[in-house]
Image 1 (cartoon, rainbow, N blue to C red):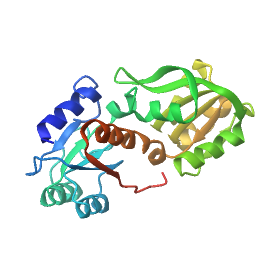
Image 2 (cartoon, rainbow, N blue to C red; image 1 turned 30 degrees about the vertical axis):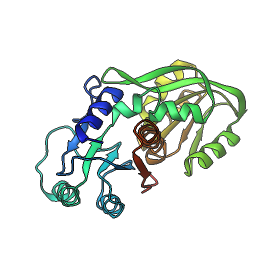
Image 3 (tube, one colour; image 1 turned 60 degrees about the horizontal axis):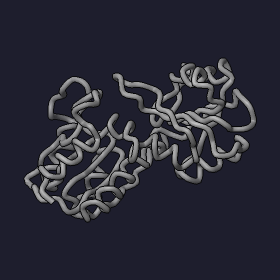
Length: 251
């Protein structure tokens, strides 16, 4: 598939131009290779991930966390090394950060909501004006301990739970990645349990202040599902070969 055709489709499907982000998203690096047959999927861009994608003969690396953030950096140091490694391997780089968090079909939070059986889903947790998170009722209430076991199994992670609320999960809010500073917002939604990625000391006691259970499943773990769902979509729609490269940070 021609690179321009593919990136145009991805830009439209993910609403790259419409969703403001912390840095430019979409095609972040053009290699000489303009024909895309194999797409390596990953959460991040790092030397070992690029090396494995190159061994697999990937034409494109599609990630959640790209290499361009906030102010434009010098193409030197670690960033320069990543750029040189991608270019020397003929690998194009496509990134979708907030657009992949927010997507209603293949987004991290939509997929997590499906995985844990949310019904009557509503969107919340805006970043730059775009709601990223989901909240809804579970199909059937379950004990908190059972829910955390489900999360551990589904995401291959080790959750950390702040038990500030009831023993049963009925209404669940989800926000992938870093969401520790959103506990008060979750309480206003009427949720009894909040699933997010990573925490911080500053927000540790917020769960108890607001009477919530907060389940931290890891920034990485909660953001593996979107790129995989997007890869499946591209394989089914265009017949492209995709493979997810799992490099967990346990953070």
